Length: 232
Image (cartoon, rainbow, N blue to C red; front, side):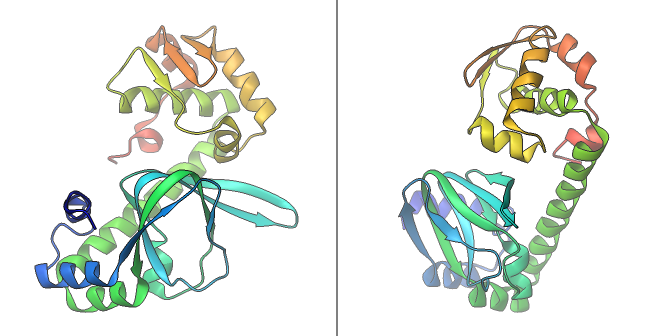
């Protein structure tokens, strides 16, 4: 593993306060691997053998049932996924696949649980991480149940704009089909929502979105910090 990757992992909230010997033991048992795009990483129902850290690329978490499939989340660097299944030693509730060529770190779940049992700072960080994930799920449910399609798409653009530092132009980080699934709509409804928003402060050009009037965009999508603020 490159020293730069080691430093990035060490600086994640999940690992930054770990006892040094525990962190080194965890990394010694882990390994980094490159994956091309469109590779299945895990399948729901399988045992949680590893905790994954996305170092480069992009990973889609999804689920399927009775011929239907839905994207549930997109994981970008640098983030972990499947933490809850790892700690509970339970089957994966979601499947995962790469969207783009990706570099992942795989940490054996048994080693993660051992560190959880013996490192209080790591255990506290895991509880905080899982609490943050739970609150993210609640926000996602509120977004899906309390907003129209146009409001969901508009607020997604507002969040992209905030993450970009209010750049004049932002770009969708992944495909529109994935975005439609995450926002709980069909690709056709997503296209109609983008079209409707073009008279309310944005201009679309493929995956590029120019923010021409932030106030007009907020007026139609009505941002709510209890849904949209990742810090809350």
